[in-house]
Image (cartoon, rainbow, N blue to C red; front, top):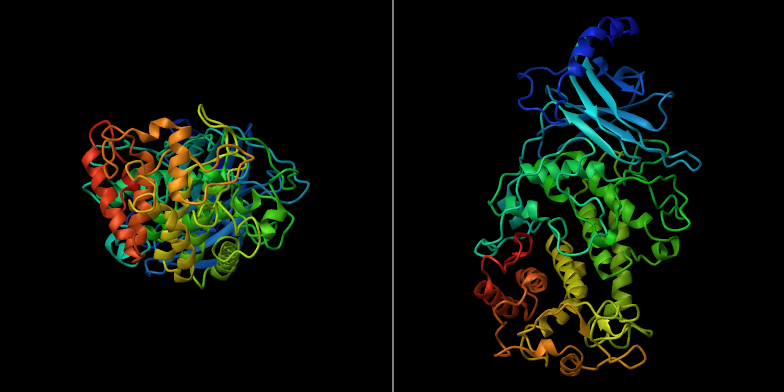
Length: 561
């Protein structure tokens, strides 16, 4: 018979022991070796004590709600989930997640409530003490806890069970050119503690090249290429829990159902309970922290993180935009939101328990997004999408709100590098199994090919400047060809004409933006998109020739066919 949950008297008897443990240096959430092999503690014997502002709050698994089990697709584990609340500590949930027939114990701590009218507030420092019957497993000092954030303690981390080579063969992960980015310094080890960021950027709208922005992150690429251990990648996957995007349904403990709440929004005027935290989210600069980790470990915690991020991307827009399937405020926001949405649709199991949204849920949203893009860009029937710069030049963004530069007035430029973000994501979407997205990829990639084939009228020695002028001022019509675009840019930003050979990138030119083009072309070449392979081969040679210890591309953009 399972041991009973400790009584209040038994908790009191443990006070001295617990006090001594809590006074010791705090344990990391992922300790070293787990317990000896053998039957694990009974879920009914697990309990947590939260000591907060001098008050003790008890959470016993025996008092919780038993959710449906998670079954690993590779057959490595079956995990239970029991949710426990305490009326005296509102909006705080403890989840006991024990593996069946395994000694592994996992406890998840979440804060937040989406119920309209709830008073949102962050928590200050507290101590979480975890028990198995009368044994103290751990005492963790948590410096603070943000609203809609979470963290977990594991007796041992999930092992990596997925094969990188097989995942690449299946198209789920990109392949990397390990002869590129060799002069790029490694990012250095990252570690995670509760409410920590493991090197991630707290103010997500920060601009500029960052390790965490891309189809994959730099830390993920370092591991996938064989240049580093998985430790930093996993630390940042855990740090996804710090992001305040963990919206759950008011009942049932599932990831928030934004379809059941079509008017729910974080956009002004927001109607979901919220409060400020040290983390600022932004779809336009959002990393995908857990897709690679989930593929490699099968850990449902990481799938939940992906779904939370995808849910945030929808809720961050207004209800009207959601109705038209516009899941991003700008080209880059659309790219990253589409990336995360496609990941959720692709890897959520068909038989997933109800505490994650189903594959069909995400697939229907992805299908709607595809239809929206086909009708808006690929087969438009109405202005302005039948006109320039969308037609012929294959831009997704117009020039209406573009900022001024030192040589160009506002409202006349596109930012080419964001277009390549979108092209790379579209290539990835098709590669992971969505062949019905190929017409959108081919439409978009025509832009990248025109800048690198040496035939369009654009001089490929300058494949990806930061700004590309499409008209001389906000009231003028757009250029009608790539040759006109090149001629206009020679007038408006003379530096673009500095090169010796139209087919050779000048030594010393930045390779950052060109690396986005390279990745888009590599993914398209893998898929056999016409013209992509030749353009990739040329650009890859230029980047390899011009790379040194000061000018290089990041590993995360070193994709290869």
